[in-house]
Each structure stands twice: as C-alpha cells, then as structure tokens.
Image (tube, rainbow, N blue to C red; front, side, top):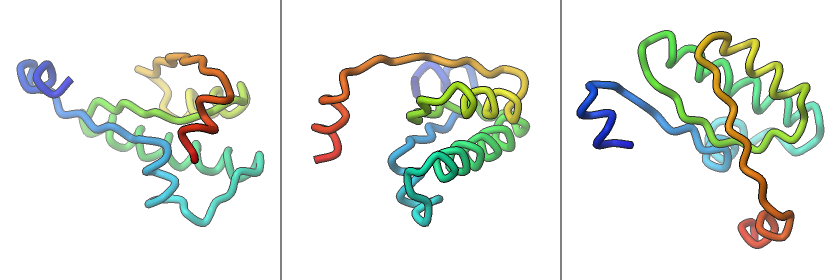
Length: 96
C-alpha cells in the first residue's frame, strides 16, 4: 500500500481497531453502547481525515448492522465496507 500511495501521491492512514481502543478510547468497554461510541468516534476521525484528502483504511470489528450503518452515515461518501469472516476461535487466540 505504501508504494502504491507514494507512486500515486496519496496520503493514507490505517486506523487499527485494537490500537484505536488502546490509545483513543481506552475508557470504553464492550457493551453495545460502548461499541457504538467507539465506532462513532473512529468514523468522525476518518471523516475528518478524508475531508483533508487522506485515504483512511479502518480495521474494526463491527458485528452490528446498526453500527455499520451509522459509520456509513458519518463518513458519507467514499465509504466501502469489506467483510472479513473468521471463526470465533481465531479472535480468541488473537486476544490471548
């Protein structure tokens, strides 16, 4: 990605869900409300970066359609959702 972005003269940033939770929203838990707030915060940051010409690649777990739809509304245009399906065991192994 870095070589492509550099060649095309694009700026980009990767928002990693785990890093985001650790550094930006460490006060939030994993309740439905906290998950919503976490994704909403990330979406607003992504929109701000996008509005300044930065391509944003965001990797977040968002199992709720309601939350994904909110992120789509906040970011508005140029929003693309990529679904990655993994077994629950893979997530548990990653966290331990």
